[in-house]
Length: 183
Image 1 (cartoon, helix red, strand yellow):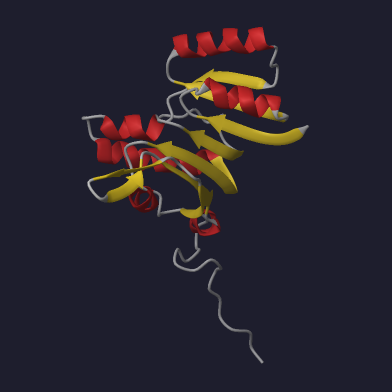
Image 2 (tube, rainbow, N blue to C red):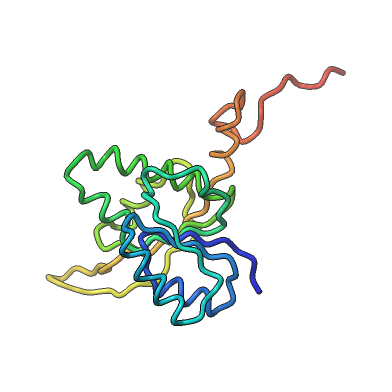
C-alpha cells in the first residue's frame, strides 16, 4: 500500500474513489459544506473504502490540523474562489497561503481549471511553486485559433519558500548567506 497523504479540495469524489482503489492509504477529503461531507461519507461507506477521511473545512480558513500533505488536488475550488465578487484577489492570495501551509516541502499541487489559462495559473502560483508538468487536455479551434478548454497543471512546492519562512534566511537565495571561511 502506498503511504501518501492526499488532500482533495471541495470533494470531487471520483478522485477520492480512484486514489483509494489504486492503493493510496491515507486520503483526506475536505469540503466547507457538511451536507457534501455527509453525502460523500455515505458513498464511501457503500464502496467499502476505509482509507478515506472526510472533514468539514474551509480552505481559506483552515484548522491547524491540516498540514504535512504530499499531494493536493483541486478541480474547481480555485475557480470558484476566483469568481467570488467579494474581494477575489485577496481570497486568491489566501488560497496560495493555505496551499503552502498544507503541503510538505517539495509536495505536489494538481489543479484543473476551466477559468484560467496555463499562463495565468503560472502567474497566480509563481510565489512558492514551480511548474512540474502540464497535463494534456482537450483542444478546440474556432475562428482560426486553437486553444484548450481547460488547463491542468502540476506544481511543486519550492524549497525556497520553506527556507524563506525560516527567520534570518535571505528570501532571494536558497541558502543562508555567511561570511567566507577564514584562511
